[in-house]
Image (cartoon, rainbow, N blue to C red; front, side):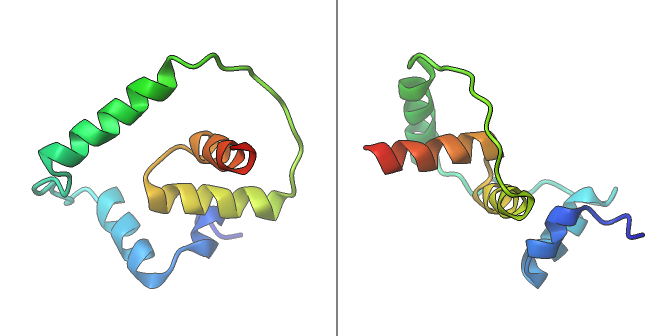
Length: 93
């Protein structure tokens, strides 16, 4: 049995290489790719959505769909629950 996380099945070579570099003990954090303007934009968007009332739900989805959502969220740099919420928000807006 492989010890590699199942989500890694959906990573391309570049993403897998980046994940391995981050997980290795020799990884050094370089300059941020986020500009001050982009950080401000992200911070403002987060503040605008944080104040909205949230309701906790439970739903069942296919395992492969969840794995793909987690991989997509990893590529986007966000928690998968946030991605799911964003997808649902776009669908109903």
